[in-house]
Length: 606
Ligand code: F6R
Image 1 (cartoon, helix red, strand yellow):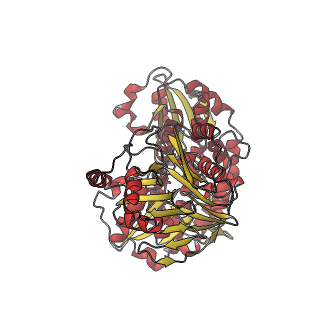
Image 2 (cartoon, helix red, strand yellow):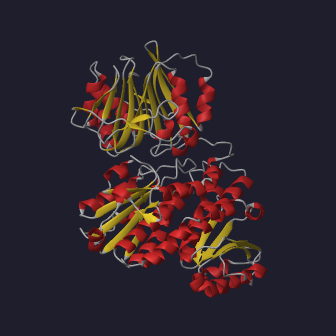
Image 3 (cartoon, rainbow, N blue to C red):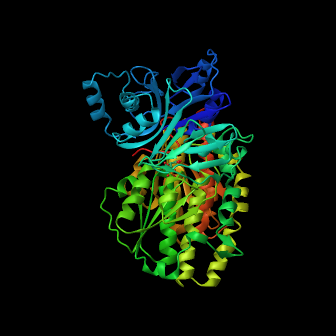
């Protein structure tokens, strides 16, 4: 999982590529490199560590180039060293490659190439591609790449240069994302939209197997080497949308954007107080055919799926299984043409979620994706798409994507329910009336952060923090704990509060930090009893409460009262203080909050 940016045009290629890579840092950041051709000579410069190391190194080079390829790496094969950084070169140094993805058969290919007399200096799978292309190279880079690709198995987006053809850039996508941006003065290709936005809003979402030959303008070939036309689309995001706008970090910017994100998310789903999902709508007949729903996703998106499961079961009475995508595809799930598979993915590129979608389709399921990235791979392959419309999410830790995923699933469940008469119009109106107040309520929470900052200061040096809740609150604390783990590196564990006495409570001692969420009226007394159990054992409780749990005001260390809403909508509010707590704790610890160690934003490998 890495990012690539390639450029050919009349501008300084080094600047265009480095700026693009800066916007891709969320995809990986253990090393970076570029190859640039200046006056017929190719220079390849690469450094382990953050992109800033490469930028510092480049200051020593006087390169005047209009063509180049660049890469930011998150290691999958080989340690993050200078040698393993991309670009990788062929043995004769003529071919240079940047690669995002994995070559599954690289060992076999490497062995064959070694037998044929080639040698390798890195432990990456990518070097094999450079050597393979050079093996087929006979003065025509296009022909060599087209031959080499036939030998490759796996997922890859590639940028390729040959010193002997200094005016030619070739890029190729197979499973890994790659977008072609068209500018007035050249072409720029990148792994995602923000890497191109400074230079263009006109893009082509390359399809699987597409190869772009940038020599005179650009020509696109499909996987059968036929020239194809692809539609140019206009991106509505501005570069400003994808930058920090005065916030210290993307994570806090994105947390604070949630009132707007929820409004935007609702804008194209609830029109004149009526649900209208446009092309993503299901007819009554389609819904009545469904006898089982799987929600499938990874990480935070999977946790949004927990809330989705609750909503579908509550409002539609259709049985729902919420599955982790990497498990789903190997678990022989029971799927037929009456199954609905809902994929949830911010990026729309997560490899396991994409594979789950394909598995579902293979067995005849109807598929619908809830995604934030229009034109992403999962978006294009699913039968129907519901867009979160949260705007670009850059911080590695997902925040606004989560709340808009929950909102989207909630609306879809309500749409199913009203179309099949599972809820009355009156009930739906009441719920929609509450939904439209959510942005204002989130804003109230965002205006009240002092107490959260105080608790963050106190927990920053703890090794473990516990999160407890029941019912929907349990689902919410699972996400809260993940946020704290990701950005503060504190071990955080979530528990169904009723389970504590079956083991976990043994871990509670004086001053153990416990974040307790208590919003669900039906079970509030039970939740309060569970919170009291940990308080009486000395826990320092941060209680995030709804309207009916005043009892905790006296007994908890911090009592945080959320604005009122209906029970089923509380998850969209409870997660906000949880996200803020994670952010401020990370700040207190002086960590790299937007780019936590070992993580990358878009997980395009299994
Ligand atoms: C956590 C986080 C990840 C993602 C997961 C799925 O904050 O961001 O757990 O939710 O990697 O990513 P998408 O939603 O892009 O499929």
